[in-house]
Image (cartoon, rainbow, N blue to C red; front, side, top):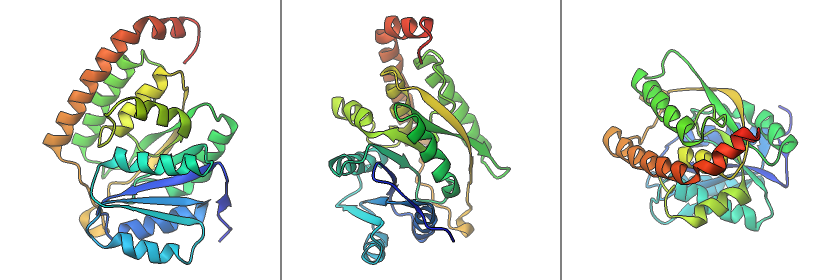
Length: 256
């Protein structure tokens, strides 16, 4: 197996909450492609944090942080982004810990970011036949709102968490408001970065929906998280109206 590509500017950032054994498969796959890989254990109670720290003790390319209690995906990513910025990293590729995202595409996404560092590289999901129809439909609805909120700036998919962010721009956004700390993170990050003029580049990427027998884990709650998304889109629609003159002028001028 060829050595993982090493970078001093781009890292892989994996938030994890009670992902079980699948976390170790995901980390191993990511490490085979990239160096470094950082994992933020978001208050997991399944023992994976301590086990992964032992693995990191023998792997200089793996860094593990453990949060004392569950704070949400966005909060875990924010913790990692702050630490990464302090170490001089400029970009982070986020991916889920549950095996849904294609680790083999990490080099391609990182290369795209390195060639266009002022952009965000967004994965555009390619679904397999096992994808739940209700999840696919819900994604289409959320994407329609994201298109409206950004005046169709080019976000291919607002929910897919396999993507590369410019760290400084994203930290500025997250530090300016108290949202984006839970499941609402991915959508709001892409929309608010687009508002700041960060151009999206969309790359196709397969997404897997693993069964429980395959080690698949999902913490998505249809009532709680859909209400969270509804409140998020309400905020973003209001934000779009406030920013409409700037967004329209940018669109007319040919900007993203």
